[in-house]
Length: 521
Image (tube, rainbow, N blue to C red):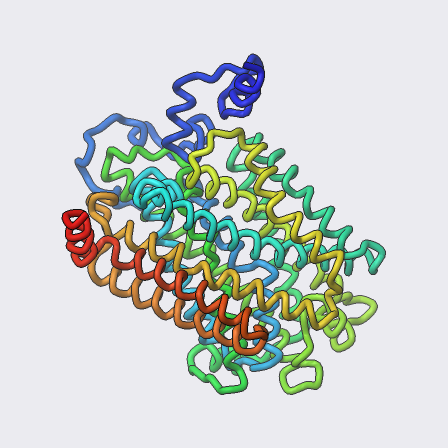
């Protein structure tokens, strides 16, 4: 009986006596946010009227006040485009390829933007996020497999983000705080997140807005002081160039943009607003404003990525240091080349990196909440889910911090392995997303059209091929031993079989095969 009382006390909506109301139970099962936590969109009396369900279309008059009410989820989403892994990919691309890969950064951001817009559309139209819908759409074994893959992607991303934040702390403390100490400090960002979440969604979004502003100002100052070539920047954006020497950097740029957990996150974030999904006009309006907000957020993230890439293109392209630049020594190289007593570019770099690491680790914790709750339908209080999610990443990160030196070549191999780990998970976020937004039974009248569907599948296949190249490259160069390679081949076969299953599951071919197998059994 005592264990039952303890379990009930951990449920959302439970009172101090361990009781839980049935209404809160229903709300939790249906929504990523409790009703009281959601932000009201109404800016006038007409917005609150209980009109007909599908009557009317989206109001023609654009409202800046409404756009402000919807602003927030897109900026939390765009942080995944600015995490330390992306910054490292940017600086390495600039140092190794100069301005040549800016066009690829532009198109990679556009492809990532398409995926995120589809994710937001799914969350708004269905009132449920991607993890919840996967649990309902797929059989239990497949849903659990998707959950496991997403958790692995989260752990891989979080290790890189926490290490990036720890490196920034080490730089700002002039080396007095070791890497493991920075990891411990970063681990406590979970408490910052829980503290802010208790004060409402808008307070949390404002906090992330400040962190993004810090990044933008830090890297804009670096851009202004180093003065990259505007002409070369524009040429790099519009003229595609790719050589055999820069393929690795090109793959890194594309691979870093799409983060599997971010696809799940955005579909949940858009449910933080009170939207009547029974009214078509309200859903249309929400999709419209969320699209604008997401695009604006991605423009900001693209600006920051451009600043980082061009600064290192100007300073280190063609130099002896180009091949050895990473997150930790990048600031020192900048200081030696551009720093003065009145312009400590080392610390400006570290401040931007710290904002990147802190914001991305907190959003990773946020994403972990939705992923765990959605796939497993766990009715746990937010603080408990945050603690569990944070533990998944902090334990392996602490091991990395204790046993690896950031300047050791082994750390580069580990980073590459973590990139591969996240690349492996890409299909398990994109395929379910496109399958669901293309399904009328799920989306209703908001199902995507044939052109969007085709473009989405082209983007998905392209990203899978790019990441497949990264996986094969890592396999060929880093995996040794016949036994290990043979074992990985078996794992790869199972992996490909699962991807094929996800692709064909909603096709007529699968239905015929399933019917034939059912009859024969």
